[in-house]
Length: 156
Image 1: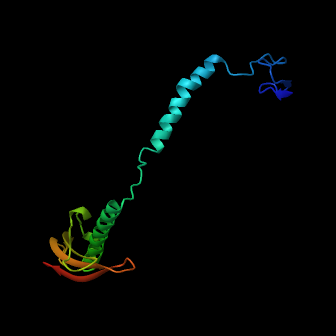
Image 2: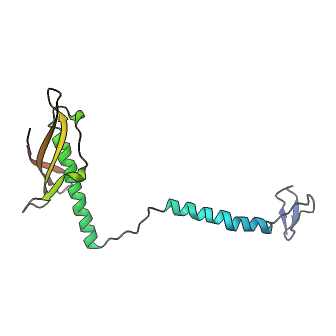
Image 3: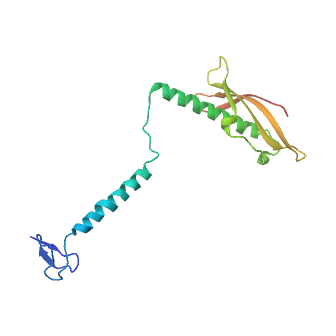
C-alpha cells in the first residue's frame, strides 16, 4: 500500500518515514509533537473557555421559575409605564429617564397581574424649561401578555 508524499507528491510506501525521492520527513518530529502538545492544546482550551465563559447551567426549579417570571413582569410593567407616560409629555424627545430598576413597582392588593409603578422623568415643558415630573401608574397585564394602563397620576 502507498501514500502520497506531502512535499513532492510522489507515491511512497505507507511505512516510510522519509520520502525516497525528496528525502524529506513524512512524519512529525518529536519536537513538533511537543510544541503541539504544550502550545496548541492550551491555546485551544483557552479559546474554548473564552467562548463558553458566560454559559451557566439552567435551573428550572418551580420556585426560581416563578421568581424570574414575577421579576420579569415587574420589569415589563415599569417599561410599559415609561412608554405610556412618554406619550403624555409635551416634548418626549427631551425626556431623561432613570434606569427602570429605580422605578418602584409594587403589587396592587387584590389585583392579579396588576402593579403600581412610581417613578419620575425630567423633560421640557412648553416653554423649554427642564422639569421633573413624578408619576404613579397602575398597569394591568392581559392574558395575551399585553400591558394596559389603568390609571396615571402625575404632579404636572
